[in-house]
Image (cartoon, rainbow over all chains, first blue to last red; front, top):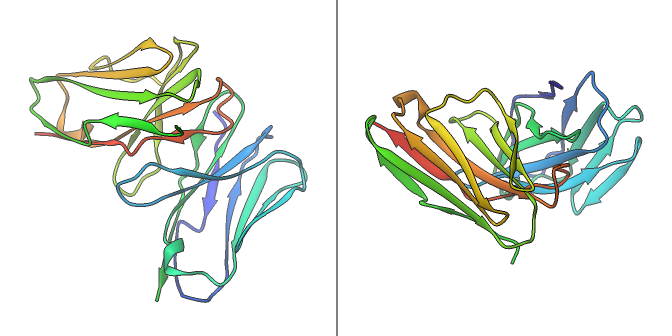
Length: 108
Length: 113
């Protein structure tokens, strides 16, 4: 089982601040996905990164896949209350197990 | 249609009851998944069906019994559950068994009394 570690586990910030959350593993992944989950709902896919070193941008969200394809980061610029949620990373390789998640709260 | 539909949305059952959770997708996906999520925890993989065959069973107790009648439907039959089985049960699908992109339903919030 490939273990995915996410940090920080909890993050509470003010609106307008920037933040970065991390997803790390000792295993190499063919692809890695980031999801956001809001209370009472299922996770929603934000992005899939495939190539080592890849950077993808989704409005104020920037995702990076490590060169060795073992880790990834999610950077949010000028966070808004609507960004509040549980951010989960998940690795491919014929199974789909999630990291423990980062629970983000953005206060107005 | 990019939805995964789960029913019921909420379920309360006693420990002697038998109930079923249902999941449906019409995206032509060939892999479907059951996850269990406890409060403030990430989803935990339970079962994976790929091309209607059970490909992964994460050592789930036999009181949970999955069924995949066809590629669009996934059921989870529940019998003699325990209070600690109370959780949000999420269904997901992906185009194939590589699980590169999962589409999730909104889940069934299950309470076992």
